[in-house]
Length: 326
Image (cartoon, rainbow, N blue to C red):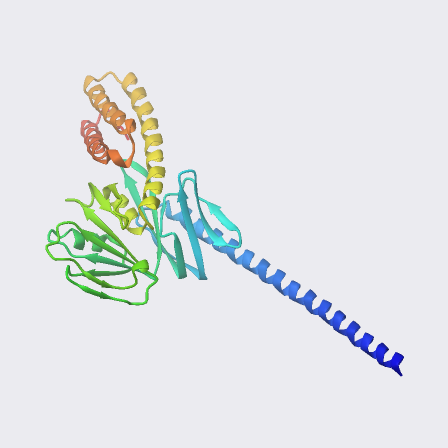
């Protein structure tokens, strides 16, 4: 009798062990399939986003919506590396793409906006990424720059134009970007949102399409060069992200200016008209000034010399007998 009971117990133990092994087997299969599905989803999203970025670089002002599952995309820009990460170890390096974004974006729609950065010829396309979960709040100023900036921002982002003494309540967004101009006479807007969700920049300029200074949350101040650069500061996570992305832009600026310098030198040596050579000489001096220090610290000189370069090219165009600078 005891042997029979022991045998039954052993049989049940064997059944439990076999059942546990079978259950574990199916759990592993489900986890593997889920992991594979996540990898496929992340890979598809990477390809979709990369296609949008590349295609948007063909035309300035393009505005696109990228449908995606409710996941978080992390953007990284550091001096020696830049990429975006969709999770599960799926990353896409962006060493040459000029992308301004918050460090993390989440939502069902990713908004992509592109502008051309011209100094005076096209240097590259700036890509701005955000979602509907971020609210951009532009505070009115006395000179009308705030209204101009508000109108320039794309219509399908979530944005508000408010008075200088506005009361801002929590509206359940993931983040808020408050954009102010210096010189407000009021004490400022009153913010009633969680501090870690609010990012603020203060702009000091007389013309948003020229140059000026931007002060970020951490009191770090950087310069901007033309409104495309200003938009970059607005869409960036912080001062460090903005500076890193602009450094990539200036590397491209330096490369293209150097190539154009070589071209003008060849033009100057091949033409016989003295007036043409004069314009080429001026252009070479202006390009040399730009390439001497192509950084945010030198924005005023770069802006002024690029404007002169544009004027030289216009003068050559009017002459109708000299090859153009660009």
